[in-house]
Length: 286
Picture (cartoon, helix red, strand yellow):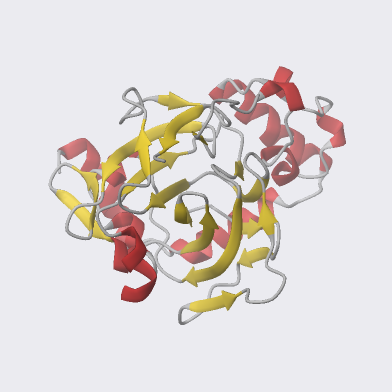
């Protein structure tokens, strides 16, 4: 850990992460016009948010900062790939990592990995379909679109809420906190797809006021003392490629998992690449 990363990371170990996130939730959901408009204009200017892509561009139409933050885009702003056997990018953001799952481990940063079992809530059977498969970790910054969409058409099998810490998921913290994505609070959704099982893991972070899915609504908060699991044996929801599956109410990270010899990432889909929702990032191996 270098000195700059240490300054960013070490205070997070002692901060009341969940308390601060609750406070942020109160602010971001406030419908006080002056407060929410100040927050919105500050973020737009500081991060260079492209409002031309937004379905709604009148700032007064957003009832809260969170309403703005999870804004809908114009349909034509993110065209969905039409390539045969394509895997679509699930979000706007930057690729933190993409590669193979080796010996049950997912690469986080130089010298650090975490286990698929830990990521998926400690259940070895849940993690087994992803042995020797592939993964990608995509970071959503404050300027990005914050809804998540399906990389492939899938039928929901299981959803898991795993309580945990709320470290930041920025680059400095990713380089510094061991097992970061398997320590933070997260929601994992397991789908059956044409490429076999697919996991979408929505990882929370400090100031991420909630994670929600389209079939369940808000999953967290509140947090919970233990892992919570939902199964869908009857009339499970099926979502088509490109359909919205969830959203972050503030920014964070999504991790995508596929099984062995099921998907191959595109050669240019690698760490530090900026990505857009709907673009082809890999292919199903048939």
